[in-house]
Length: 612
Picture 1 (cartoon, rainbow, N blue to C red):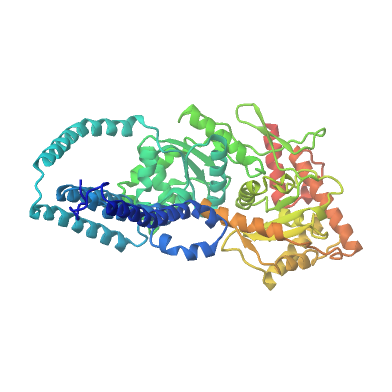
Picture 2: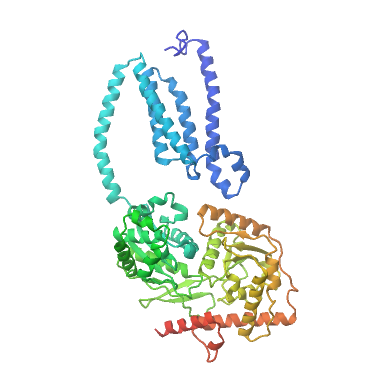
């Protein structure tokens, strides 16, 4: 053997050759080291982004900025392709050089066509065109080479012919397995209206994954191509969970998912919320005015198909979320959805009720659920005791706000896994808090959703710690539409406080919470976006976690005078007593007329349920 380009050099027999090999090994360290560094950067990229390392992203943007976020690996694949192109010249003959070059670029072309990795569409088109032209050039160059290795060519042609013939039955079997035998990629597909149930959908997915480890499709995490949405429901989904809220049927995409489910016999599991009303004619009239109505026609759905699908879905509604659902209601929904999935499409699930019946001998915060088939299920709610270091305060009367608080708790708990005394819980004032609760040892995360300061329950929750010093306070807003305080805001807040005082029959102090709320908004509010992707949510949770770790003592002991403090104490007692009276179904004559409108409605529902 001789060196390919220097035939006078005999391999391994002359000193010059050994020096050439040593030089080549040293030179090879440069591209191999670069590939190793790029592999390491790709490996640590997700963790650095979760840590919010902007410097890392800026320094290595030349590797990541040109491709889609989920296609970061393509950068490494492109570098490996270029290395293989350089190594092709080591092939002994022109025939093998051309053949190996064609194989390399065919694989590259297939990746470009299938994955479309570049962030800009035009770049994907140019990449495919350029790679195709290079392949054509290599193919044509084979006609102009003097190197004719007929034996190798004959062997290669024979192998290719055998491979083509053998792949035909393999392709047929693979198609049958893919269509009929393989498990579908997603056990659950959550169909929801983002504005009215986006937070609950995220919480439901997190709970399903925690309980069953099944794959759950949620558009914020899994949808890459909107045009394939209905195909995913048809071919890749076992059970469609429909979160039937107000606004669901105003979305053509949601209606299209339900129609696809009906036409293709996909299992359907609707979960009915209190504000959902199904009127098929009104729904279709509203949809026809929507700008995206044409999408349903393009998908091949006739008006009759949609009418039949909506009627079909209504026949499966057997999971109802009551208006009084509390902190533990998500676990009940998960249990019922899983039972429905295992029992089959015709199963009648239990009706999820939220009427609490307290046990006088046990104030641990457990609640008894009245189910449709006469059995009782017991689920724990949030509890607050002296061992808890971080308390999340949310508007429990707003289901989306409550779901956002529970999402935040789930995201924060792994960050404090080494410090269990800091693991957060949601404040549940329907459970009696321990006397003498040391708020000075607590850090409060105040989750503010749209309309929370108009909620009597949220305002009363603030009374638990507004006049004390807490270890730290971190205000968090949940939506772009959240309105920061204006003069009209404070006027409305004072009217709400006056209403609370009148209900408790105490002296009215309109500005009871005004100074406290003003001091809250003097701080920079953090943000959590429940309908965003899990990666975004994780980053936002880490920002909140860092803020909690760095938070300082907050609050004024002199916020209220002695008379106001007595009023606050009375309001707290009135609130707890009313909560326990309503949850147990025990109300004395004359109390109902003094109850606020929302709680009057709750009482009526409670009495009706226990009568049944």
